Image 1 (tube, helix red, strand yellow):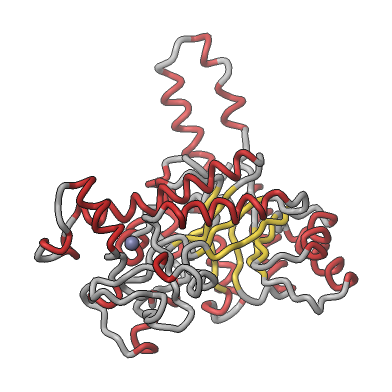
Image 2: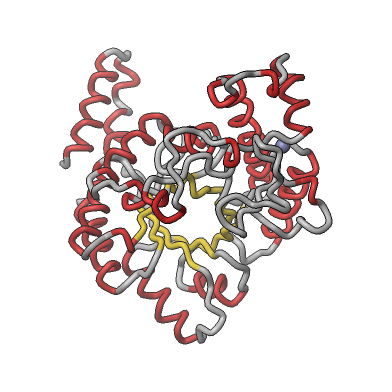
Length: 360
Ligand SMILES: [Zn+2]
């Protein structure tokens, strides 16, 4: 019995001792129940892959314990090849950060505290084109987009990325890259202050955001924005569940960092699983921080849905560090991992060994 099972068994024993005799008889079954492990890979399908490549790669993934792939683009051939190998094929989409409506609906795009729109003045990088989550038209557009994707029989589920506001604070490792010091919330990176958001905030909280001296310190303004993202996610979630297909999301590494840096309150999303991007290098943290981040997520989720630790393979210096990252994730309650980056045969071997060791 490993430490986690020991703790679990101990907890059940404590609860059981307070229950009537009749219920106690059922408890040993619960103790023996193993949590279902799942492991994922984020992939942009390479259309040059041959059928033979796909067959070989996916068979190797399956053998190593990869149970699902998040595909960043549609490719029926890739999806079907994954399914033929016994792997779930989910469609990974960019949710709020998407540029395709800039030309016909520039008013759908978020505005900064300075009044600049992502439609014509994107923050940080050209591809940062954030839709405003307050607008009913945006929600309608996103739910119908997801509905269309999930109507396809070869798509097993939907995976949301960029499901948040623009980063008001970037991960610390990027401050040098963009030559910006973000020790406080700067107005040009703080969103969304469009007319619709201002009106809705006033309607819900009775305050004019423009009249608040320190909007970055207004707790109700924060709550308002968490709620805007949650509402859209839950509407998309309802669509997924109408199709009887699961919905998952790639989110910021811990509930606290997600709310603070990108106004993403993911523990209140209605999901079937979550993949926090616990990319330790982005935050200048060591591998052991993966365990801390997983523990925080598991604590706040309190069993609502499973957590799969997102690992950025380029952040690890060698295979032994990858092994250690997987161990920290599993020991702290993750139901598996999700890899971003180049998944080598040795990474697959490590995953197989560590999953087996954890289950033993
Ligand atoms: Zn807005």
